[in-house]
Amino acid sequence: MTTRRLFLAGSAAFALSACSSTGRSRLENSNVIQVDEPWASHYSLRHDGGFTIPGIDIRKIPEQFWRQDVDYSGSEAPGTIVVNTTDRFLYLVQPGGRAIRYGVGVGREEGLNFRGTATIARKAEWPRWTPTANMIKTQPERYGPVAAGMEGGLRNPLGARALYLYRNGRDTHFRLHGTIEPYTIGQSVSSGCIRLINQDIIDLYDRVPAGTKVIVVS
Image (cartoon, rainbow, N blue to C red):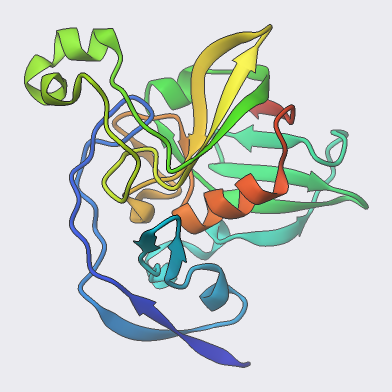
């Protein structure tokens, strides 16, 4: 099978919570690996919005969580997003009984508490992030310094993209977003909503418009 080289750019980043994560990024020092197509191209280093997104060593992520086309037997209309928080999968339903499946990470609180149907009301590239008032109150030493918010970038907990879910015209405070901890995909982490590898959230972002229906199940 044809292979291509996937370059990894080293990075160390701290993490925050509220649709974020609380550990440290585990991006490795720069090196070169080889993996089979098409995943090398899916997860290679890319330049986006003035930032350089490191390539991902997908050997460190279980293969079932790699982006792939799969059979899908659900009754949802094509274009619908279905998130299964138990199995750690996000499906973008396609015509003909197929779906694009992405691996996700799930926060133990925000990511597991939301259920039901919502709509993507807003989309953002390299979104700004602000901790909630409750987060600042309960952990002032951690969140006080960023109480005014954090601009988008490689250290921002929301990653490269965010899709904001609303229900009945109101913000649910539940997001589908990128991550600065790609190797936590498939896991339940200390906090956060539904996180995808940055390369995957960019792919999803480009495929779905505002108004897309999102169903979250367990």
